[in-house]
Length: 304
Ligand code: MG
Image (cartoon, rainbow, N blue to C red):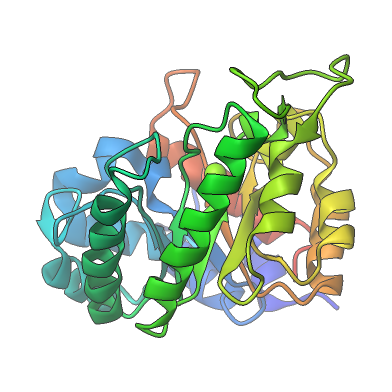
């Protein structure tokens, strides 16, 4: 069936179309697609005129946001409750937030510091009203023992965050697909490394499913020489949210099979995903890149 959204979208390349069409296009596309955006994608451009920049994001067709840049009650230096109000005024919704504890190496000595961080951060995010609180940074994991300790910390963090009514998740990059050995001094990456266990697999095994879920970044999983679809099939109960990402603008690199990824995402009943974009490599602005990602998903027949 040809929807109104499809008709408008078919016209996006028409250069003499009236400007008002952009808004019509977004509202026409809204009922069928629920796009999420990780705000890191916009870099500093988001903050040059935050209220209007948020409205632009909404007009592109995005509905939900995953925050980045939380620090002591502020988001990117803006008071978090003011930030929340501006998001609400734009018609967007804050669904998730990326936060990292202040230390990268987890030890017995800094354990209480990490837990104090989670308590304060979870309380603040309960006020923001997020659906998920997610750690995107990989702690130091050079050996099987270090991975086991990190999982213990994840479980405890999960318990603290859960007490505020929010599930705690972990987001990967590529180095979680490196391998570690007992008593090791470094993780080793690459398909020729035969010895050891994959850190991500140990995270899945050693964290409590009731306390820790996984937000799989599909691009970083591919960069980690693994198949995100296979992981989603094997770990339906653990991978609850996705980062939809490509080398730059979605669908342009030839590296990512988004059709298979979305098919599996729907089969697993995953409701939320967030588009992510690193610094644009070709001189275009982050806003142009993020718009390109939205257009790709709005035009893709496999995205519901
Ligand atoms: Mg990501």
